[in-house]
Amino acid sequence: MKLIALKPIYIGGVVVTEEVSFEALEQRGRELIQKGYAKLDENENPEQPEVKADKKAKK
Image (cartoon, rainbow, N blue to C red; front, side):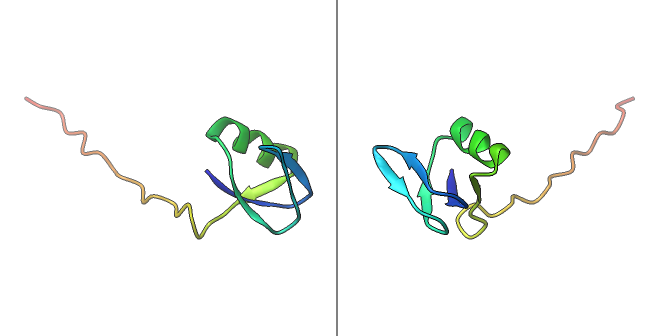
């Protein structure tokens, strides 16, 4: 998952400074977002359109 650092973060043996884009695993990325250390890079992770399933009762 592609993220943008909001605070300096030590990840992968490197310090990533503020406003720098970096790659993280899904679980680690969600944790950093929740703690306020990073935000999702919308340019690299476009939101997928919602797919509405047709749920019709078969007779």
